[in-house]
Image 1 (cartoon, rainbow, N blue to C red):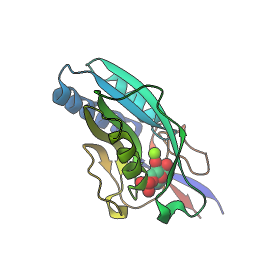
Image 2 (cartoon, protein in one colour; image 1 turned 90 degrees about the vertical axis):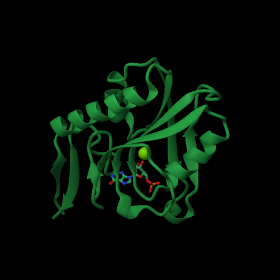
Image 3 (cartoon, helix red, strand yellow; image 1 turned 135 degrees about the horizontal axis):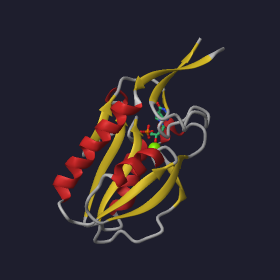
Image 4 (cartoon, rainbow, N blue to C red; image 1 turned 120 degrees about the horizontal axis):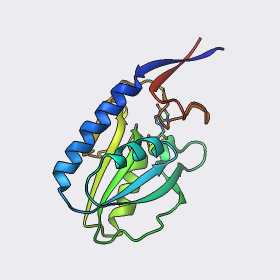
Length: 174
Ligand code: IMP
Ligand code: MG
């Protein structure tokens, strides 16, 4: 089977939309300090592009999470591979995600972070596939809502490939 990647959102479209979302975040938080929590690996490109456009004081931390075992799609149990380096109590936490699919990872992460008493807790995602949602999570900032297709590029992978593409694409097997 031959794999090809079709462009869904060009580099220019993505950059422009990130700038819009950053402007919204700048307006909402004004000059308050924001503590970004980037969810790796997928969130890495988006986090950098977003962070560069924020005007307030920003600090950053990184988490690596993975689904537990092979059949975790339904279990919803998430393993924390790399935990926070810094306390989040009293901070305005903004979680930066690549994509929200079923929402299980995010639900787990939110309950984990809430227990650490942040001053506020919001979510910012590059992509959202609302059709696929099985949990009740509300997302504060979404760059793009997309149909239920397998996405790569801009940090997202298919079997660890394509993360480095500067655009958002759809994998096609033919
Ligand atoms: P959720 O827990 O089902 O919302 O899954 C979220 C995670 O699944 C994301 O952070 C991605 O790592 C991965 N994922 C979901 N959809 C895609 C996709 O279309 N392409 C690449 N990774 C995806
Ligand atoms: Mg993710």
